[in-house]
Amino acid sequence: MEEKDRSALNATLGKALNRQLLYYLDICARCAICRDACHQYVETKDVRYLPAYRAELIRRVYKKKHNQIGRFFPALYEGREIDDQWLDELYDVTYACTGCRRCMLFCPFSIDTTQVLAVAKTLLNAAGKGPEMLVELSDASIAKGENIQVFKDIMMRVFKDIEKEVQDRVNDSSASIPVDKEGADVLYVALSGPHTILPAAIIFHQANQDWTLSMFEASNYGWFLGDVKRAKAIVERIVDEAKRLKVKEVVITECGHAYRVMKFFQQGWAGEEPPFKVSSMLELIVRYIEEGKIRVDAEHIKEPVTYHDPCQIGRNGGIFEEPRYILRQVAADFREMTPNREKNWCCGGGGGLVAEPDFDEFRIRTGRLKAEQVKKTEAKIVVTPCENCRLQFAGLNEKYDLGVKVSSVMDLVVDAMAV
Ligand code: SF4
Ligand code: SF4
Image (cartoon, rainbow, N blue to C red):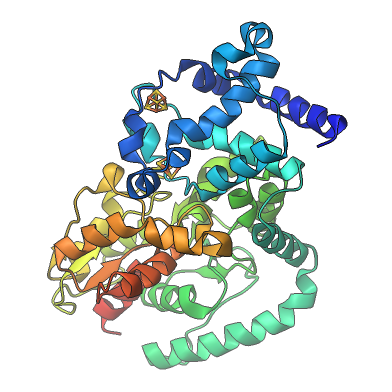
């Protein structure tokens, strides 16, 4: 590595050292309590995946280059320089992390390893070492936002096909999938493909909701990449659309990180409160059931059902009870897995891992704890409101012979509505 590149990366690290990060870097007592909280360490017993060790890689450079005592006595903190070997090791432990934040929950000082790794991602991206797949997916989303007219005709044809299916399912030829509807109450943001549009459109039809479908997908690969500029550009496409259509509420489909980005990060990046409410589709469904706008039958689904709390929706998004309320309304036999809610084990596929081929074998291997949790419930249906988790469960199902059906919450609601 050339000296000028090293200096540039050190300058980037220097800029990232805010009060919060300095606290995390200075306070760690190396007690290793976080060891048993991380599914990746528990499964691999590899010190590189110990949460504190991941942060230690950043800490060593910080101590040598940016800390007064460390500058003069680097050996005291195993201080080290940035070099190619350090970047390679940093890549592995940083992009392997699913961002589940279970380590923070158990750390006596509430050290948020993901915040330290966010800086690691900034450094890796600055060094041109971000995962190629995430870079490509992010740039494709941004390009779509900049050239939406080019994509519009194709998308409208896809939406028309889905609309036809909705009409057949609800037996009503007036059922529609509105797009670009100015003044609609709700802007619904789905994922790519029909699977999160179809059930939502059926539910909206039954609830008589005034809605419009976003032209943009909810996923934000810039956020997984840890590139704030790209992440901001991706979420702003939806914000601009919501402002242009003057909607009252933006409803994010069942997707952990997309909900968190729109609800918690967007406002900070934009520096202003958005002129609309942000909700998860789960919250909206609870409202519909409570207000009697949709009717569901708990006797319709008789097979035992269990629920996996996606880390970004549950532990990091605070939505624990809404999906449980819904599942108790639609399924006769709902069973909790243990532990659950904020202590739930990560499924192993979050943080964009399902989109990174480099980590395919690793994520299935480190999902074993989750597979064991599911087996103990003897459930036949695993419900989880996150696309990453559902994709991971498809792999776990096969590898660990779970024999379960994996479902979104919306799909079960539609089943139980008996439309
Ligand atoms: S639990 Fe917290 S203080 Fe202890 S080693 Fe882990 S990060 Fe450091
Ligand atoms: S956030 Fe999750 S995967 Fe990452 S280090 Fe902490 S416990 Fe492990």
